[in-house]
Image (cartoon, rainbow, N blue to C red; front, top):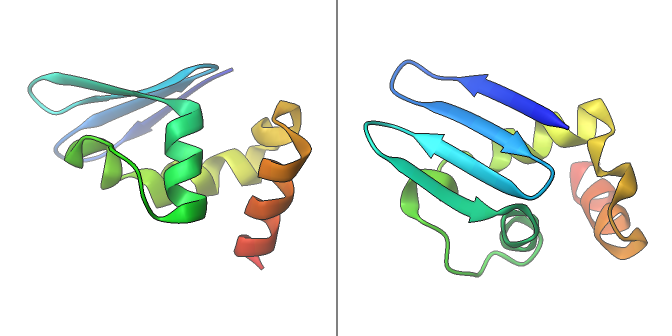
Length: 82
């Protein structure tokens, strides 16, 4: 999987293992931590990544890319998206 999101001031790329944000400098975070942050609201993510978490999760849910994740994470995400 490789997903790219474009913003006026940054580029976001999501792959199977990480989220990368380039806004003048490259900042990355593991994808499982990004999903955990969305589900629980806590965790240590760089501010540039934290800003785009809702967009990343929305795209992953719409494209079905979270199908391969653990059952509990997928169920939690679908519960929050309703």
